Image (cartoon, rainbow, N blue to C red; front, side):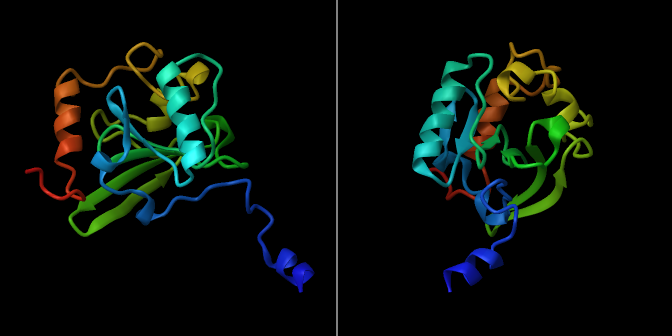
Length: 167
């Protein structure tokens, strides 16, 4: 019976994380590191991801299954496995958000476009290879447009449609 169970598990199981719409929830419930939000289904891996992001030291890799969001309508997920070798295993997402939850509008590698400046998400993030493709102001990535301030990012996170209204 165990052999039958083992043979029924897909060959890629355990080597790749595939996010679905239920993985993208209220950003206010996620851990905030500087101006980004981070989530992982497993508490131990979330702690590791937080340590890596807080330390911002070159050469560290986030665990597969890590989800990083700056704003509610875009995300990057460390998928791992053989997915997107050029993007170091990252999958980029354009998301639709509402009180009912999240809809995945687009997902993939280099073809997914940043909704603020219309360029490839991966194209910008690939400028931060030493930081596992996580862009911050000093990681070498192309800057977001000037109107995308830290205050705007905080407001977008605080007013995430998936979250209950603030008091």
